[in-house]
Image (cartoon, rainbow, N blue to C red; front, side):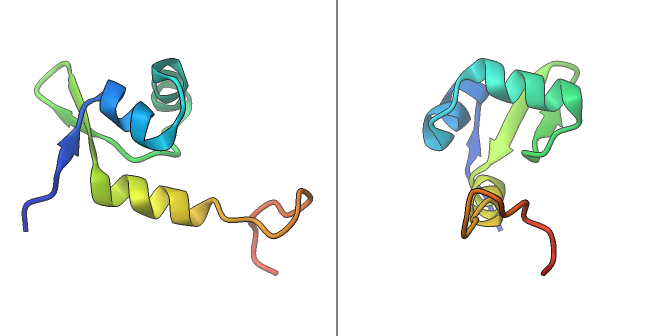
Amino acid sequence: MISQLLNTADAAKYLTVSKAFLERDRWAGARVPFIKIGSRAVRYRLSDLETYVDSQVRHSTSDTGGLA
């Protein structure tokens, strides 16, 4: 199965966040899954971004996303 790979700029556009947000996320522990190709290239699978977005659904501002 071939999955579309996005660079940081394209992934940021898809998520409507800044590139800096994704760069900080990778540095801080990567809530948004990424792939490292070689020593420098960072890519994001579109399917992983969709899964991440789905996992962020909340039903109130006090909902922390934990199990009820």
